[in-house]
Length: 224
Ligand SMILES: Nc1ncnc2c1ncn2[C@@H]1O[C@H](COP(=O)(O)OP(=O)(O)OP(=O)(O)O)[C@@H](O)[C@H]1O
Ligand SMILES: [Mg+2]
Image (tube, rainbow, N blue to C red; front, top):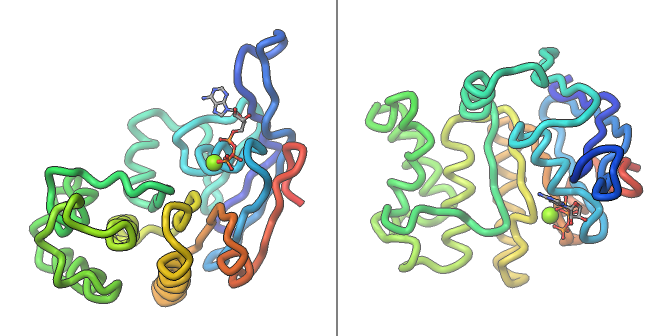
């Protein structure tokens, strides 16, 4: 088991007051290594909240999250930053690329904390991925000189650069037209498969959800 969420509860506002809004309620989830999971559900049901908890960008009020058997809910801020950098990859709806950096520099950015951005192995890996997703010609261009689909493909490479065990994607195709969305979906699945990456993606896209191992719906704070 790669990931285990055990009785996770999360809301916003002060618990026990009128301001409190429950979002996730006693939620459980078990994800095996290499599994590809789609999370669907109407807007506002807590899909991003759930990904933020798994991505350790936020913490549950109650419950525990285990990664590879280790309880990560007790980790300190420093431990969490290292954990994220080492084990997780993120793709968001908008690409969040640095505008002043080129495509290639953006892709290498996550290697900076380890001082690995200039190592031969890592740059070869970056070049391999950049070619694989079809943006080699554009590698020295800045995000403003790239199309939406190219930016999103850059974000995919950036998310994979540290060889994460778990890739978290929040509506990765949400900002793309249908053709580009399908192409990115295919790419995401193929790369996850090839690299043995476990994938959890939030999506409204039927095609994306349909090509996953499991499709889970977030409803009333639980996954069904
Ligand atoms: N930081 C926050 N403070 C207060 N309320 C929040 C916060 N973030 C989210 N919420 C609320 O929690 C609920 C779940 O939000 P969340 O973003 O997880 O939904 P979602 O399923 O990702 O929706 P969408 O499909 O629109 O992206 C919403 O009602 C939202 O208003
Ligand atoms: Mg969301």
